[in-house]
Length: 431
Image (tube, rainbow, N blue to C red; front, side, top):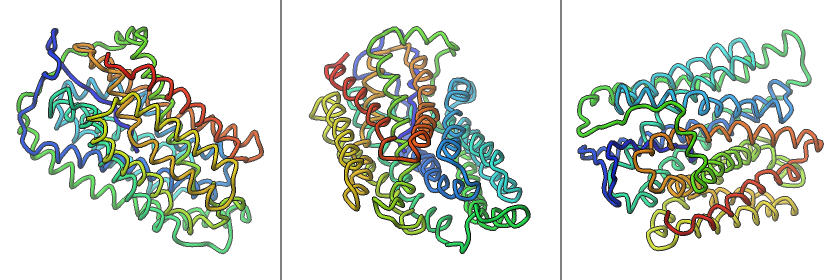
C-alpha cells in the first residue's frame, strides 16, 4: 500500500532547484526498496485479517474497521515524534528502532490469539503500525536524497512500486495461510467455552504467520544494525514541533495534505472490504477462502501502475496524470456499484491501478519548493495519513447504516477521489 510520508531534511536556507543534499552511500537504494517492500506488505495483510476477525468476533462493519483505525491512528500519534527520533539517532539506527517495534507488534499477536480478545488484536496492530511509521520516516527521505530534485516525482513513484510489490505478494500468501481452512461452523453459532475454543483454534494461523514475520524482521534489523555507521553525508535540521502547521495556510500544500488524508482513506477503505464485497451474492458469491487471494489483484494493479507511472511522469504533467487516474477511479466505482457478477468485482479491483501514482504524486506536488520547511511539511503529511483510520471507519458506519450495502457505501471513496481530481487540475503547473 502506498503509505509513505517523505521527510526531506535540508539545512540549506537557499536551496537551488535540481540540487540539494546528497548522501554518499552506493547501493543504498536497494536497502530503501527493501524497506518499502516490508512495510507495504505488512500493511496490506490487514485486508486479509479483517474478514477473518469480523467472522470470529461477529463484528459489524464499523467494529471490523477498528483494525484500520488502530493501525492508521499510529500515523497521527507517532508521525511527528518518529521524525524527531530519526533526526536524533540517524537513519540507520532509526530503521532498526522501527523494525524492532514492528517485531514486538508481531509477537503481540500470540497473546491476542491465545486469549481470543479483540482489543488485544487492536493493541497489537497499533504497536505494529508504530514501527511501520518510523521505518517509513526513514525510507522516503533517503529516496529524496538519492538523486536530483528534477526527477523526484519519478523516483518516488518507482520506489512506491516496491511498496506495491509487497502489498501484492503478502495478501496472496496471507490469504492461503489465514483464510485457507474452512470451518464447519461459524462464531455466531457458538457460545461460552465452545466459542472461546473456536476463536483460539481459528486464530492459530494468524499468530503463527506473524511469528514468522517477527523472525524475518529480526534478521533484517540485525543486518541494518551492522551497517549503522556506513552512512555518509547525513544531515538534519532542528526539530520544529508543531510550528509547521502554518504551512496549511499555503493553498497548494494545504490542499495536498487534505488529498493525502482522503487518498489513503479511500484506498484503505476499498482494500478493507474487497473480500466481503466479492463474497456478496450479487458479485461473485464465493466464500472468503475462494476470493481472499484476489486482494493481490487490487494491490498488484497499483504496482504495475507505479512502474509505468515512474516513466510516464518524466514526459507528462504529474498534475494532469493525477486528475486522470482519480477520474478513472470514480468511473470504475460507479460501474462496480451499478452492475453485478464479474464486472462488478473486477472493476472494483481495477481501482488499484488508478491508485498507483496517487500518493507519491500528491506528496511531491504539495511539497514542491518548501525548501528549509520541508521537514515541517513532511511531518504534517505524515499525520495526514491517519485518513486511513478515519475514512474506513466512516465507510463502515455508512455500510451499517444502509443495512450492510457496500455498493452505496462506495460513494464515500468516490467523493474522496473527486477532491483529488480537483487537486490534480489545481497543481498541474509547477509551484
